[in-house]
Amino acid sequence: MPRPSFVEFEEASLVDDCPPELELEARWTQQRLELALAEVSPAVRAVLLLRLRDDWSCQDIAQQLGLTDRQVKRYLARGYDHLRARLEG
Amino acid sequence: MTRERKLDPTTREQAAEAWETFHGSDEATPEEHRAFGDWMLRSPEHIAAYLRVARTMRTLRSADIRWPDTLAETLIREARAYTEQVVTPLREESPAPVHRQRPRAARAPLAFAFAATLLVAIGAAWIVWMTPQNYETRFGEQRFVRLDDGSGVTLNTDSTIEVKLEKGHRIVRLIHGQALFDVAHDAARPFDVYTGQTVLRAVGTRFDVDVRPSLTTVTVVEGTVSLTHGLGEALPLGNMPLLRAADRVAIDSSGPGTPQHGVRLDEATAWTRQQLIFNNRTLGEVADEFNRYNRERIVIASPELRSQEITGVFKANDPASFLTFLSSIPGAHVGDDDNGGRVVTLDQGAESRP
Image 1: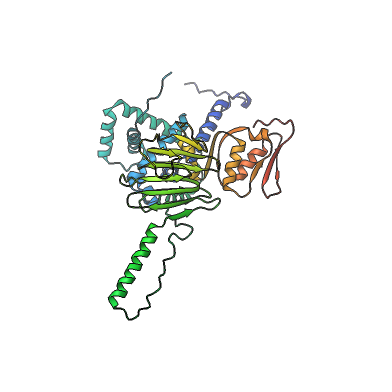
Image 2: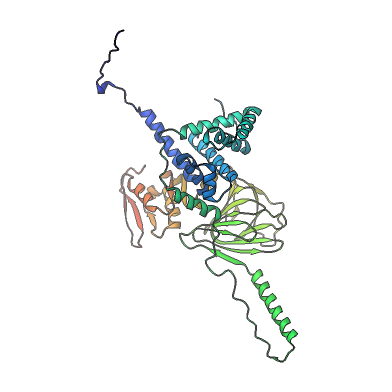
């Protein structure tokens, strides 16, 4: 069985791993996310970040913020909705 | 071109919960899984709502996203302060009790003395009850006040309200400044906000009133508000035009203008989060807004620069970020003025477009 042959490319000939349009899109998304987080109330922001960034459970968030599970889910829903509107807007 | 259908809030909320159930955690029970499966199959709208959430979550779970590095403790503290804060007014809420000289007739029967004391106590309590309570914020301060009827009032910088909660009527006078009212529903007790010659009546709603020297702006966040202007305080409220959610009206010395519809509510209430959100606002307006919150005044001396429009988000207590932005404009210079503030000038003939 023939051994696979490898061809070494010159680095300069390789395509940039992050083309400008993707970089631009990523930057745009990041800016929209920051704007969206700045617009929601402190309670919704806390719930979103603790859930999505820190991966806390809804129960833990509820306990720490003095809310019910139901309220946490409502805040999450409101937050997702707002993020969606901003990220797709 | 296809247009995304508008989904009702309950559906959106349920969709978010469904996503949480299926992907967000391992807390959901098999019954919950089944319930949300059934919910999704019940309507194409439910599936559409779910897919929307899923699309957003895919973006948010991307490795490229950089979340703010605010500590969890800070987030929790801010959230708790926001949801629970009840603030004591800065100055005494109740007047000093009314002192009444003890009757000289020391030999009066004990019953008479007791009755007199009781009357004085009732009188004092009545006066205290009838006296309006004042709440105020100083320059650069914001606070949330929970009223006895359950309504909430968020006061912006340098604001004063006078509150009188009576049996059949709730009256708040916004003497100066800005306040966001979150009115507890009580159909039997109308909630009226008086500002100058304008009266705003709300039953179970949320609205913002911003009183400036020559202009008062009312923005309805939720529910409806009726507005009456210029008739004094004995008002025949009832057939007045209603302002609905996302409506805004500006009132000047000639009366209310035409209501503006579809106002961005996140921008209108940004100040409650100590934020200043500007959408195509002139640099002059932005500077004026910063000056409401900060003692170090920013003066933009160049009319050309003042009229430049920008869009952006700032922290109200961070004028330095705005000054940094201003100094990045070609030809703009930031210096000190004689009053301890900062003055921004523009070189003659400089291109001022940011």
